[in-house]
Image (cartoon, rainbow, N blue to C red; front, side, top):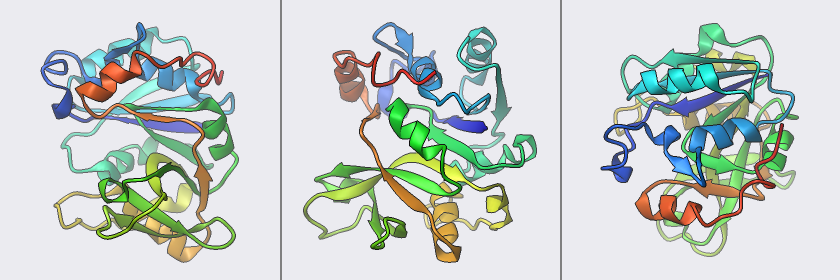
Length: 232
């Protein structure tokens, strides 16, 4: 199975730490974020494609030295035009079956990723109590995705936030992306259109550690990660 890891971002909220080091290579408990991410992938994943742009040469060098996955390669997103465009840049490299997609600057539980690998189309969501800060998923009675709402106003109580892990079928690229209101091609358009055409199952995350800013990065240094991220 293939896995795609999104690692092309600028990491602006982690400056000045990301001025010379790309965000996925920042250390957490002595290991790069990306190293933890590769180690958490399920054994079914035998090839990883990492989408790079900013300081991508450093990530390419890391991939040549990593020991988690037999095959790991970088794909360059020539222009940062959104997560949907980043995924689309991998189209010619992917095999013929379902594949995983993960954010390269968040940490995910190995058990969650293993469940995701068993689906044809799925997304990982985590419970949050401040839904206005996240993309929120609502579900049908069978646990499949109903719709995604970006940072909803007026929604209260515990909701399911998009955690940035997806399983996509190979025909996902038959969907023609359109520019979002913020002028980017969004990966969530793939998710929403797949849900409109069939079932996209929603898996609830047991562990999700987004590292979006310096405070979150500092907090991650205090989390015991070895067991929850042990996937391979």
